[in-house]
Amino acid sequence: MSSSQPHRRNDAVHSGISGLAEDTVLTGAETVALLLAEHDAETVFAYAGTSELALCDAVEAAGRLRLVNARGDKECVFMAAGTSLPRANRGVAIVHGARGLTNAAGALADAHRNETGTLVIVGLASTRSARFLPPHAEPDLIASMGTFAQWSWEAPAIPGDAPARARAAEEFVRRFRDALGSSARPPTRPSIFGIPQDVAETRWIPAAELARPWCPPAPPVAAASDLTRATELMAGAARPLFLLDDFALAHTDLREALARLTDLLGAPVLQLRYRRGPMLFERLRVEEVGNFLGWFNPFSEAHRALLSDCDLFVTLEDRNIYRRVVGVVPPCRKVAITSDGGKVRKNEYLGGGDMLLEGEVATTLRSLADGLAGRTGRWFAPPGEAAARTTPEPADEAVERLRTAIVGAIGQTLSGWDAPALVDDSQMFGGLLAERYELLPPGLRVYGDHGGFVGGGLATAIGLAIGDPSLRVLCTLGDQGFTNAFQGLVSAVQEQARILVIVCNNGRSVSLEKQAAVSGGARPGGRDYLGNVPGFGYRRVAEAIGAAAWSVEMRPDAVEDGAHLLKNVLAKAESADGPALIELGLPSDPAMWRGIWLTQGFDEATADRSAGPRVETR
Image (cartoon, rainbow, N blue to C red; front, side, top):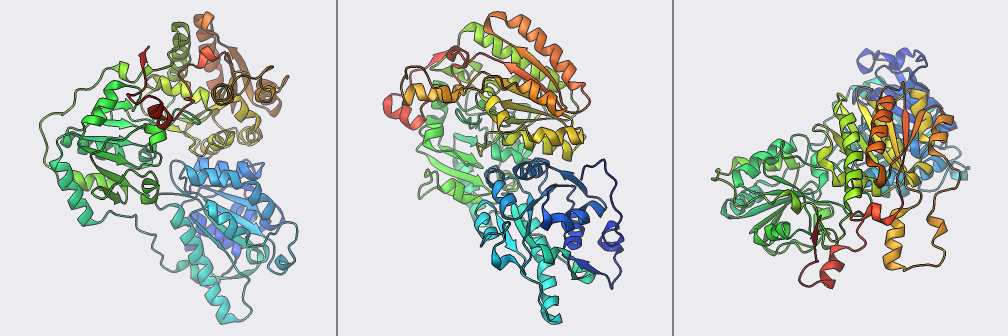
């Protein structure tokens, strides 16, 4: 199923829907392949069992589709999600029934949390045997797993009489298109389409069914009356402030629309920063939105003053703007602009006089700007760079130099790539990179993981690289993540994906050690269960699979030597033919990670410090 293998010609599906003769009768699998191609899917990742062979054969025979063996169930779904990061349904997954789909449940849930629109096609037991629950069947499998999807449906048995079969064929085609339409509709999330083996293999769907007109669901639009009221609120506000979550940056034209609106209002823009768990996500830049002030830092007196002074608080695509993450939000009027109103309501900051505008976000911003007259200047004075670096846990100078050297070397490498993308699957290392985000080049696409599936980012990054060979992809990975994910490298080698993986090996789960020191106290003898496996070499594993690999050690007492070595190794890795891996050894010493990973949320911090947290500036 590698792309290097020739496709087996099947005239029924190779030339596409327009090339079908009127009297052609298709199998369920051929119908699936034709519809995928018609809806601009490009790469189909499969980890097939007996029920999926007809599906894989049809996809492999179809024009415009590429079939890739993902070499694992969860890897299959992660890779399809990775390919679909730039555009929904660009990547599709085919997995086996009960054991394949249940094994991929974590990947499905992760794609759902990250709002990645992809289609998961599940090959089910034949309808003739399903009631006996063979090993690859479970009762209500698709409905149960649909909890982790935006849309799900299971094709029933093929009816015996001709009129019912015709109705079932029409429904099958319509439902499959609905699956693709749902996963492409903001907020994008996975769809699941279950197809029994006999439904896939039987020739029963007339080609004419594929010629029926179908209209994709229109993107949601905020109500005109709500837009009018919100425009009046913004026009009447003297000191509006915008706080966005990174989910907003996935919307096409968001940056241009936000720049125009906030310029008209003279309003500052801040971006939510995650301070524990996965911490690296795409961030706005001042070159894109002139009033952008950087990551919102609740430790900064200047940032807290901006919030306390504003008289209209506007949130964009809020998913996690609640007290534990951001501290106390201002008491003024609020407007939430989002594609998912439920995610805002759960955060409990909207009151009776506040507004929620639910619809396509960039369209909402443009509509608001169209109704406003421009103002003269900004109402705020931009705080200096020190505001972003204020922390109660400053690192020493040598550690700061080391962090700057690491991110600077990575940023320099990425700046030489034509279309760079970074997929982060780390926690502490991602936090380190976020600390120096300004050293990463403009134009870089950054994909973080809100689902917290440790190890999912590697397969996601591989899927992104396989699905779009024009991209160069960097995956930043933690040592624990590599242990849970290196199986995905097999497909990267198989497809010669243009991916560079940097594994941060700091010896143990530093984040949990740091958390345990606060919540669990010291333990005699330490916590061995948080350490890495002795003798397990990340570089050696990568080389054994067939990837080029190098090792680099960096320490605060030898920054210049380490930086020179890292730059040299990065140059070798980016010129490798196929996937490459760098094992970056960093100290586990707590001093190396000061200021990264908060051990308290801001709800706890404000409860402990009624006057606000004590801060120091490094």
